[in-house]
Length: 167
Image 1 (cartoon, rainbow, N blue to C red):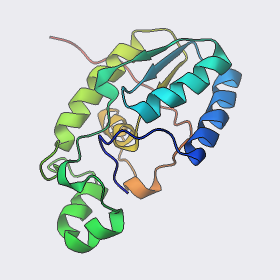
Image 2 (image 1 turned 90 degrees about the horizontal axis):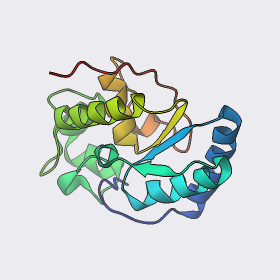
Image 3 (image 1 turned 90 degrees about the vertical axis):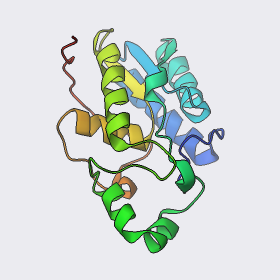
Image 4 (image 1 turned 120 degrees about the vertical axis):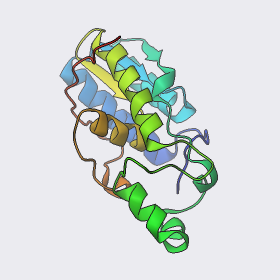
């Protein structure tokens, strides 16, 4: 199901994933935790923070994409009802925009700003965000993201980021 900006708490599976992430973060020597303002991300960040002893910092630009009228619908429903638009979404087409929501171009720009803030801070850093934000980060870094349904949830994705030039 597409959550987008819906703001539920972590599910039991999400809590298990947060505990595994906390163990991995502790082993990696994480020095900074940056999190989306969404409840599910902040709850994950709190679990990790307890394990690594680092206070999380909320970074508004890490928020999940505004998925407009797609929020609350399953990927299967969307693919059946709007196959062309769904294909553009899965392909991370730069022209894609969620109906009544945010464009991919806008999310990539917002994510780029967030990554610049993270890159200016202590390392190694852990960013706790959402699948849409992860795909946007991959695009911002020049990588083609996989379809959304193939992005691992509750996993660490390593991304090297160089701060972008500012005008």
